Amino acid sequence: MEHAVFRPLQRGQAKLILLGATGGLLAGLLAGMPPLLAGLFGAVAAAIATSARHAAGLRVVASEAGLQVLGGPVAFDAAWGDLRLGFGRTTRPDGGDLQRYAILADPAGRTFAFGELGGLGPCHPVRGADGRPVEVVELKDAALLLALLVQRVPAWQVLPEWLRDVPLPPPLEPATPPGAGDPAGPPREEPASGVEPGRTSPRRVGVWAVAAKLGAKLASSLGALGSGLLKAGKGSNLAMAAASAAAYSIFFTWQFGVLLVLQLVVHEYGHVHAMRRTGMRVRGMYFVPFLGAISVSEDAYTSRRQQAYVALAGPLWGGLFTLVPLAAWSLTGSEFWAGVAAAWAVINLVNLLPVAPLDGGRALAAFASSFSSNLGVAVGVLGLAGAVALGVTMGFSVIWIVALLGVMELVFEAQARAGGRALRLLPEPARFGPVHYQFLRGVLGQPPGGSELALARDLVRMEQAARITPMRKGQILAWGLLYAALTVGLLAVVALLAHLPGAGEAAGILR
Image 1 (cartoon, rainbow, N blue to C red):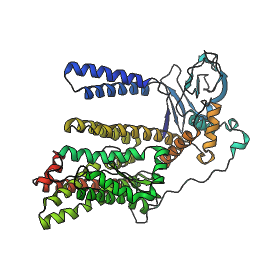
Image 2 (image 1 turned 135 degrees about the vertical axis):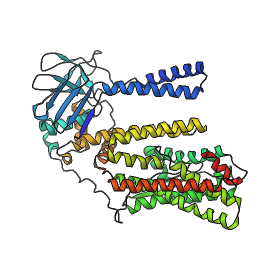
Image 3 (image 1 turned 60 degrees about the horizontal axis):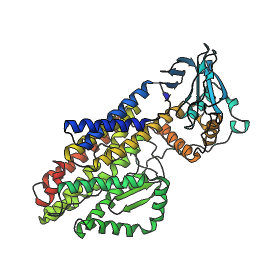
Image 4 (image 1 turned 30 degrees about the vertical axis):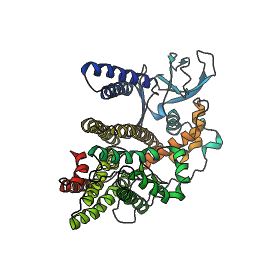
């Protein structure tokens, strides 16, 4: 049964994680562990402990049948039609502004109160339906819970008359792939790396392969500022590509710098082609010197099939393009072409690592999330653990950046999925838009200076998560086999060339 969970905001978690990192660092020094690794383990342990405590604490569970309040001083389980909904205002200990809140009661008088406290601290308890004092809880996405109550109880009188029947634009229809059975997916930025005989070490190849990928990911996640910069640079894309080639030539020869950018172009165009083929609007492909290249779409993906398609399209195009220097090596016997082929293969293999925000992580998330959103989160966590293990084993400090960005992406996606589950419970989702949620935030005590743009952005992400369709089992099998075939094929290229001096340096990263 579909259900959505609302929990109190977590406050003070950063301090606990910092204490955990400090404790891990001290324990690591006593045990002779590397300081960075020990501190990281301590921080992760503290984060897991605080998250587990939060997950087992107070929570409000909404389903088709009704509403449950669990883990708190007062617990109840009531059908939607049996709930009574009221509103009020209470004072704060410091005598500041009055705090608005919503209050629920079941037929037995058990009561729960919640609001948007806006970080202003707790307020005085309020009187429940049974006469007992009730704490006002600051819930995350409180306006979304109130929206469910308005439509499910129902309690339309909460909205002013002018908001009850506001015409809203119809939801976007999912893009239909032109080819039968062709999946589609999101735009992903790609890595860069190069190797030339005698010029690079295995570690440098790996660092550049991952850094180029992560630099693109980081640049693409800079929000409105990044978007504006990308638009500003659209007309000078060719110049940025030339600048990228020049930048890579500092570490390699100019020939290899040009070939590195060429691989980036092909890899990125694989994403662009997949986006266009599935009906996504493409803003463009952009180069960032030292950081790689990014493909930017105007749209979010509408299905997990689309997500897998676009994620794997880049490594597929880049992997097939690797056959060109491989053929040149077989015809000429040149170690230079062997090094290029091996380096290009490594670039695409790095992209296929099952760790978000790399392409392999996005594809794996599409597979797992098609079974259940919880499995998608679990796979994401396991992928991050694998990234940390890889960083420790192979000594790549840049892998910590992968893990950090992966954690951020996992948190954002988990929040969007939670909101999406709540939106799917609305009997009439088309009757609610951003203006309704903004009004409901005000009913609950909208925080002073609350960002309306941030709320609208969160709603868009939630609506996209609510509409995204899972893959069928046959599609998961087909795209999973493609993922495996790409990985095996690229590994075979590296293994074939590993005995050659130039290619051996690129192959060293996989040992």
